[in-house]
Length: 340
Image (cartoon, rainbow, N blue to C red; front, top):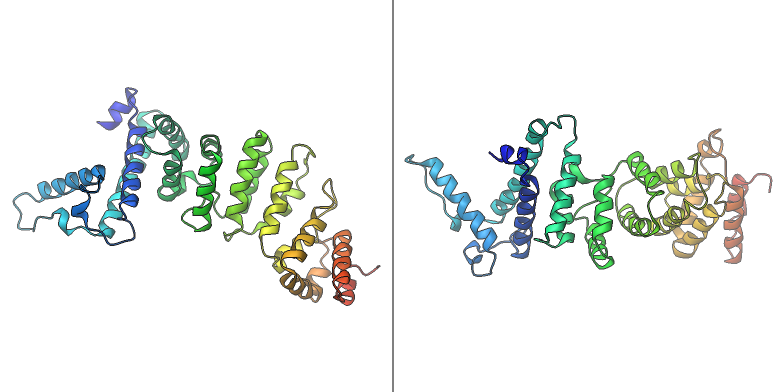
């Protein structure tokens, strides 16, 4: 029946998505997810949608049991785990609708994530739920359909103001959800596409990128290396992205892997990027920077690799900094700059 309504032009998908998201919101607001809860008090707390959903759920279960000898269930028996399962099932129902609708809507080749986008866009117009909460729920419960999806991320950036984005960044740091995932190649592809966005979109985008990649397990060095080795870098188009990458590097720890990548960056249009990154680390995390330098100075595989060309300008800038601090690193630096 739902599919028939959808084929006739009714907004079934957006309604299901809005309902599931509102259900998740009220469950969180009532403290039902991750905490013990007295479900009987839900109607007293004004969480009528959740109470209504429970009533329907238990009515359905008890009707299925009919005259069987199984014990009837009631709302008094439900706990926080059951509530979490009910919320999950609401999003699962929406996901099943998307998969089923591809055939009846003559979109058999469409990815579910592409069908999610128009539903999400419609939901943002209705204002039935705060837009920021809607997006948070999407990335929590439908992460496989939303993570690193360009259309969805641009819609998020368009609809959320700076206050909402700040709250979302807090939740990303707390690892409640992620926006970009853990695939460096896909993230780089998104970054490359973002170069054609307007400046406001790019600034908001890089605030989110920097926040997530500084706390995730993504290999940041792979993204940065691919960006600077990309053959079509334009000075003006790439300026905001390069500033974002510099801020990202400054917020990341100078691990041997990340340090090794920085000192092997080519001197292209942004020839001071490596030196600026090293200077930032020297000021904020000099002990770990020195440890990474020491480790790579003794790594013959790294130093003798034919695929790696050391950025000697950046190394000399770092040497000048250490000398100014009274730290003698000449022996180590001689391994990186044998002719100096």
